[in-house]
Length: 471
Image (cartoon, rainbow, N blue to C red; front, side, top):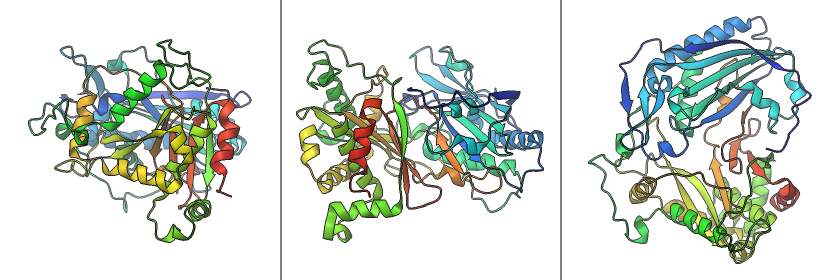
């Protein structure tokens, strides 16, 4: 990751580290994970920022830590897999979830830094990485806690809570159920009332291929029963290895993937107000903006796909893809139960040549995105699940692949661990930093903050192309 100003801030000093066990221990058991759960077992982090408030200036860090600890103990009694560990099945080498009551990890820390000194909290800062607990990991998942958290008191009296959870445990919507439950049970400066909590369903049965209720699809079925997103990924990798992309990072006919690299990406957040999004819709659709049905996600996904592909200088004849996560909780037959806590998403995919993408209107691209969304059916979910059943590798970063994740329906800033909403909730560096995250702006509910990882040399070009028609 290209350096993004953290060297001038005071240190963060850890003052306490404890294991947090469920208040009521559950019987140990194994929950078999689905292939959707096994895609990314690493910890994913977000940091909540709460600015100094008179409401809690008289509370000690110790009392706040105690409230968070007792709330987590109570929450883990219901969300008991979060107190477990991943375990490797020796018979097939796949990860499952061992509900062992080993507990989560909670850390207390202090810094003399003031939140205001961090500047715009929406812009990634490497200092944020010090606000989350990073357990040592040497490849043995059975030793890695699945939930970790660090509460840090700032010199100004404000707080941050950095939380990491294994993506094999929860997806985004499930995390958005777990965290409010923990905040509710912690009850810092508030009574336990007025919050709707979902009873989680932890068993993955409906998504397990060995479930007799799932009909396996033929490997060479019709296009309607293929996981198009997986097919497109194979085509992109094959294209890159054959040197067909003709980009500056490609070695012709080398049989090797271009080394785009994650370590050099710069994380940048673009603020798009509700008025800017409406302006873009008006400019690209003109008089038809009122009659052409288009969500903000579809419009912005089309816009970022066009801007990123052009900024990276992808050759016109190259195949380019846009892929985005689709929640399948209501797509499966029967639908997944309310409160399903596992991973319940697949990738939808739209593909064009770079030339077609650049020449195509926003309306054309939105139609492609809608078509990709409509393709997600029960058969698609089964085909996608089956396609993940083989050995898994790490997806290399590809200029021809634009990935988008929509968090706008998960406004994490509204989770009130303290008194009121967080000033901001920042994702930390993820295993796939080039993903474009769409997040609800905490000030403008119709606005979107887009966080994306870009190569430094393409940042200015992307900003120009992306912000065109936004002003």
